[in-house]
Structures are given as C-alpha cells and as structure tokens.
Image (tube, rainbow, N blue to C red; front, side, top):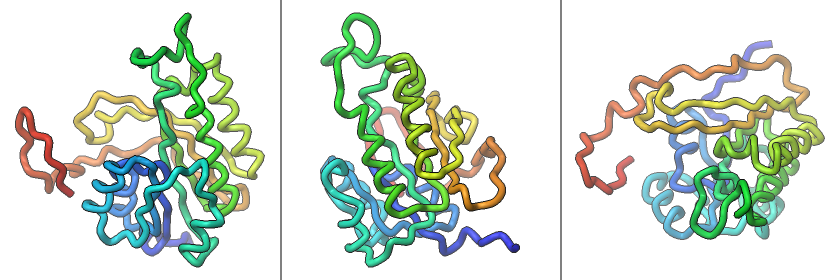
Length: 218
C-alpha cells in the first residue's frame, strides 16, 4: 500500500505556547486546525505568527473537553496531536516556590496535565502523537510519571517510544535537551527511524539577531 503523503494531513497543538511545534509541522506540510493554551500572552503571540490557523483558543485544557473542540472543528478525525504539557513540575532547576527533587519537593498538580493531553488522544485517535517535556520527567518521583505517561498511552492502543533530542544537533541555537514521548496507533503498520535529521536551514530566512533583541518574527 502506498504511503500517505504528509501534505494535507492535519494536526492540533495542545499546550501550544508560542507555537514551536506548529512551526515545524506547518513547514513539513501539515495543516493546523486548532491550537490551545491557557496563557493569554502565548495565545496572543501564536495568533500573530499563525494567522492562518482557524481556531487559536485561550482555554484550560483540564476543563476544556475534547468533545467541545471536536464540535468546534466539526470533525473527530485528526491525523497528529502534538503538545508540551507544563514542565515546571518536572524541572530539575526549579527553585522559586519549591523544588521537584530532594527535601524541598512540593506536590504540583501540573504534573498530571499529561492526562488532559491523553484525553485528546483517546478522543481523536490520531495516527501519531508527540508529547514534549524536560528530562526531569524521567527522574521525578523515581520515574513514576515517566512510566505512567507511557503505560496510559499504551492502554489507548499506541506503540510508545521515548526519545531524547538535543536541540543544537537539530539546527536550533540552544543548548537544550528535551524528552519526547512518541506514540503511533497500533493499527498502523511499520514505524519510523528513532532519529531526526538536523534542519540546517531552520533559521535561513530569519533576520540577524543582536544582543538584547526581544522581537518575535515568523
């Protein structure tokens, strides 16, 4: 059977922030149907940079249900779901109101927001999902959350692959390492290589950046 082309496939971006995931996927040829985040500043920036996205919503994903978004989109069919649930509850450098490790550990409800993401996966049954977080997801609570994310995704009948990516190896001028959780629906044959090629031209069209520059350009 011929492989389905990427162009024309659709996605939604949850916990979308300013739109990093959406930028990559739209450049790859996918079409964003909706993006959701509860932070008004992030939503404002997303709308400015992705004016073609029909639905950019300022919503709390723990309260805004998948069925409401499906009704708004008038479809239950989405090819890909991406998102980055809040990382503060897993960050190894958090020191403001408590810490996520050691004697200053504090219960943080944001650690469970991955379940809101998976609620959308369960409803829309995309072919693929990609969840992003910090590496602290692996070690927080001795790996309990890292295990929960994968086991609950497998319960939804997805093959799950955890993968660490280093931003500077992918053409991004930042020294960041991020944890990806990639899920592929079980009924889809085959898989894909567990490595990503560097995007050498990722910033080819951007203007030069100078010290103190705080602008945002598409």
